[in-house]
Image (cartoon, rainbow, N blue to C red; front, top):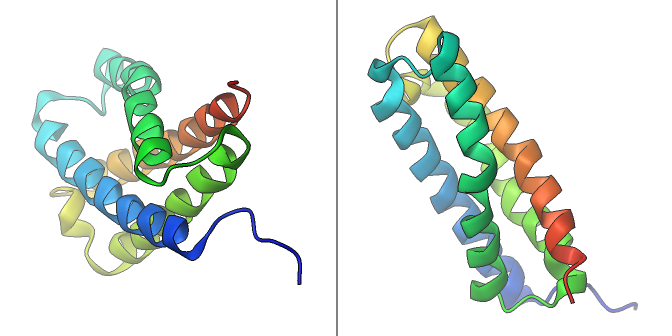
Amino acid sequence: MPDTPLTARQIAILAALGAVLWLAAALLLRALAPLGIYEGLGRIALYAAIIPGTWPFVLLLIRAADLRPAQALVGVAVALAVATLLDGLALAWTPWLYGAGVEQVAGAGAAILWGAGVFLVLGAVASLRR
């Protein structure tokens, strides 16, 4: 059987952190919604802030799971898979978690999708580090 790129311990750490980071992001987006982050310049600022704001969490995953550079992208993908599954479940069954009203739920869902893409790109960048 071929070696897996991650150990069971690393996968468990990444899965747990993926869940925690997703919940923190969802609650943060809910808390910031009254500030107008889903409208006009607020949306632009939110999406721009997600890019540098995500990098520390990529580094946290790498450090917490003790990932080598070659494992960074796969590790980020594991954490992101858990977060994405939870996000899909929450949007379907507990949309109130993201806020009141369709605008807040849609805005938070879109911001989390954007953040997921950013997370993967930054995971790829981290995998290139020596």
